[in-house]
Image (cartoon, rainbow, N blue to C red; front, top):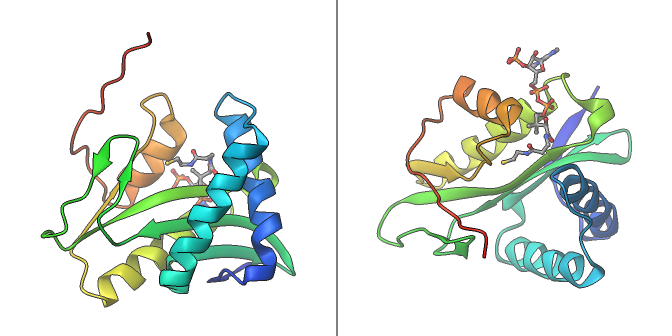
Amino acid sequence: MFKIESLKKEQISELKELQRLCEIESGWNPPQEYLDEWVKIVLGIHNHDPLLVKVALIGEEVVGYCISVKKLHSYDGVVMDVTWKSAYIWDLFVLKKYRNMGIGTALINDAVAYLKSIGVDKVGLLVNYWNENAKKRFEKLGFKLWSHFLMKRL
Ligand SMILES: CC(C)(COP(=O)(O)OP(=O)(O)OC[C@H]1O[C@@H](n2cnc3c(N)ncnc32)[C@H](O)[C@@H]1OP(=O)(O)O)[C@@H](O)C(=O)NCCC(=O)NCCS
């Protein structure tokens, strides 16, 4: 019904549109510059290792993605120590109409299996505290609260 594959470069504009919908769902309409920057980062990760950028496909349509990072990386205040064998799930999204079919779980499992196969022994991710659906999903897959990320509006 669906399959999980590594991103092909020609799918990048579809992926960008999914990221736009993801940001809209989280409460803001991202400007074009943000999306362009996001695409550059994804292509950078993909150039480094295409297996870190997983997409879910139904037929030819990209319906979800999971992007991991395995090198020292800074994002929203999180810096992974290079001396740990840790990696990081940076972005995960499934189109609304294709949710509750196991696609999110399959994307995470596929990403985690790959990371394990290359020697990673810890996988982190950031999830907003109000995102109960995603938190529940991650907890079911064995992720546990590790730290609190604090922010103050100025
Ligand atoms: C979080 C998110 C990726 C989950 O995606 P999803 O594809 O709906 O996830 P799944 O289908 O694997 O799991 C959701 C539910 O589907 C059902 N499900 C899971 N596998 C299933 C299967 N094989 N067949 C039928 N139903 C299934 C289950 O009810 C499951 O929840 P439960 O295990 O708690 O009962 C998606 O909700 C999303 O994109 N949210 C917005 C972005 C976001 O929050 N990203 C994470 C931020 S870090």
